[in-house]
Length: 358
Ligand code: TXA
Ligand code: MG
Image (cartoon, rainbow, N blue to C red; front, side, top):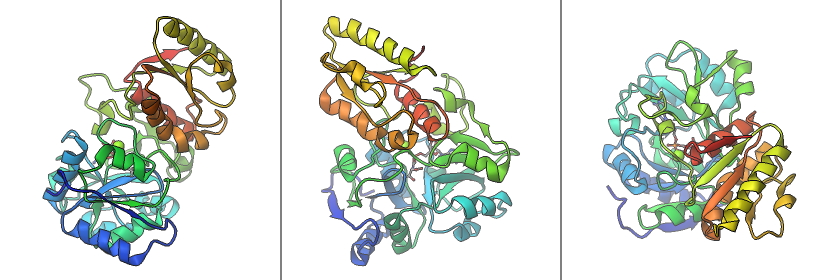
């Protein structure tokens, strides 16, 4: 395990045409059992050689990740799957043709080639082909499948820049490849194809409507709309933990009428602020002016009507509240549709279940 207490190298790479010699260096670090953070089109990942149990164990150590939360194996092409999975369901090639490279993770039965550190002992493996030139070049240079969770300390918002990675993991990983901000800002959609019916375990970059064009109706796992109740055994182990959380507690206000949502946020902000609490507000362009000039720390990731923009800036915005040093965050919700479903899933999880329906 090479994760503990090393000096983390920071290498800037061109996100479109990454320098081959830098990528070769990073590939060699992976092959030798080290940890490399790298940009993907969703968020930054923390990679290790997926066939090397010790290297993968280093990921859990560096992140402080619970051992029962399995990892996604990143591969360069769907053609590689036949090396690891004996019987591929026929929909896999249809989905791969439409969504790979891209923000879709497929959970498949089998995959005995991987150590239990990758699968957390499950009889399924999650695979994804990322759509980022740096990620693809790195996987090719490493010459091995790359196990990679998001490159944040466990429980924290996922990183969308190399600076976020260094904030959480500096001194704990060998190298970060800095390719600038990742584009989408929320993680891949995790789709379970191990049962009779496909199930979305985590909403993300590949939206339900588009998946349904290929698959017909797709079920959402119950954990998608909230935090799993203690004692539940979720199909996606990662869904049971509070996650994506800034340092201050976050209260989420949900409702279709955004003026009522904002009125409710404002009432709570006034009450808390009168009691001496430093209030942060996550708002959108449509309602942000309502909170002006009253001493609140307002962060605006974009327009409510443009969930893609909100997704791209969501984690950056949550991390911003840490710098502002607020005591509490009151967050407006958006409509949970398309990428908005991924945004709301992350905000619900960040709230640890503290959701107020307006
Ligand atoms: O966009 C992404 O998916 C990013 C980039 C780096 O690729 N990765 C990422 O990994 O978000 P991570 O570890 O933060 O989230 C992986 C999710 C977790 O919720 C985990 O429980 C689930 O995928 N998962 C992994 N393997 C699984 C399996 N065999 N069965 C069910 N869920 C699985
Ligand atoms: Mg994560």
